[in-house]
Length: 189
Image (tube, rainbow, N blue to C red; front, side, top):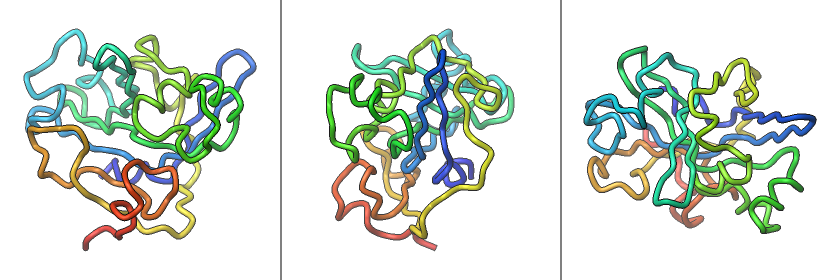
């Protein structure tokens, strides 16, 4: 599953001479037409068309009139599926991330999907961006999980399909959203 494979991988955002780097520590999977919580559940629209395109691209949407959220398209072309980036660990460019977010707390800087997009400066203009050849890309280096177990649980903020344990994170990582007690357990086998 792509969602698990993304954990510990590095996302790079490059603009002009600025490079921001962060490790993916929490994600949520969305299964397209078979998933009532997915933006693709009711079919293709102008808003979600990128989800129906080739895998390896960014699906960026605006939600609640406040936040952008970034997803990795992972379904085969024509069959929408995506993985929402819920939390990342800042690795480089933290000063700019802090200014964009108006906060100093390292662990909370990229905690929550709206915070991820804000800190990294991602918006609808990045919708459809190729996540292999950049300006926003996922590095092809092996994931670095620092020996942390993978954990899973229900997705956050969804009603339909809420019982699916399609949220994944690095157990005990300080940058993961939710409480530490919720995030400490290993992935069930």
